[in-house]
Image (cartoon, rainbow, N blue to C red; front, side):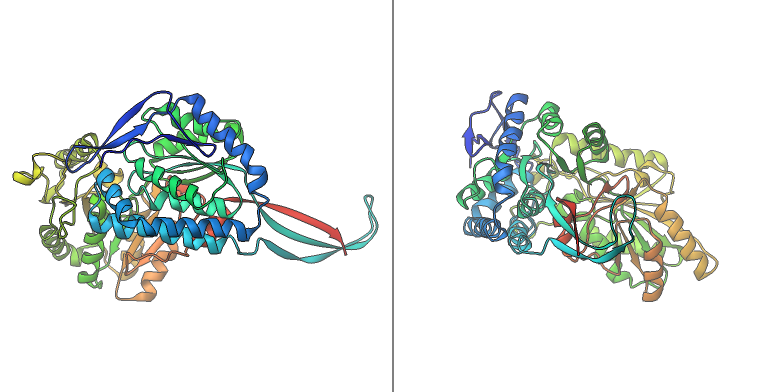
Length: 494
């Protein structure tokens, strides 16, 4: 499976100035392939190529852009098996996740934005009657609001989904007529080069899509600070997002930021516990907990607290941890040894803070765990709102449970809302209650970009993004087309 990639700049596969680095399989610790290490000058050359290509690509017809995106989806679908194998190897995802949640979602997103390229960009505004004045005679003024491409977009993507996340940026950006520079996460960039190859075969013109990678911060910095870049779309940690935002602010560049999360799962005492446990257990263990939408902060009303903890512990006990290539594995490795150590340090911290370790808490051992970056799914109970394990994003298979008391149903709602909103984050929260009107009432007051009512499911046309330190802007569905466009007003006399 060894692969050696080159940078993709201006429609050419370019030898990297700084050589290559090894991409490691998190399950076996073997080398998956060699990724190119770009120089700062090469990153700026990629942005310059995107700038040169923008003039012509932005003027192509929507039908032409749709055709390229549709062909890219077909190429990815044709080579689905090899792409999924590569994605699983470099990210550590289970086979089911690599196939169904990574490559399949990328295909779906290219198909969605092939259609999105054909969506109307003009909105007619009501005519306005102007009285005569110092700058003109009386008249009726017509107006249109038209969405135009932003320009050159730098897409900095996350390691937890090397197909779906880049596709969710690149496809709508191209559909709107932008050109892109993609800077993939250093841990698993090979899949993104595969996506670039698919787009090249699909007929994307030179310079419209560029991919540069590297392990050092200078590669990402160059992709953000280039004078040719008009917008940065970033998925990753809040700390990195804040640094990118500072650079964008100095250059008045557009931003789309999907940052950290510490999703609250409110479980009222009338909730269907089977549904709540299945939703929480499935999502916090998915992709070894490396998912920002996971409900890792459970707020359980006292009447169901002990039973919920017991059921969650039982659920965790049934999760198979191990080789992600085995069909019954649910929890594979995390992305790196450093990240495994970070997660384990949080479990240790939780113990020191007074949390009770109900399940997990120790590194998996045995014949199947002599190599690989494995973390046991862990349940911490008896937590309090001030604990760091409750307040900070761990980004691993660790769920914390905080009990709360209330004398009346109304008090329960107020307490739950206060606890949920007592966070720096506000990406996705969840509410479980048999009283649907109550669940919707609570959802409407939560300071989160999304709320799941008795579900952890998603609607892929609904806007996605966060409040507070969970991000800036919204994407998914047609909202992504809006995110990668600027509004222009056109006014004329009627």
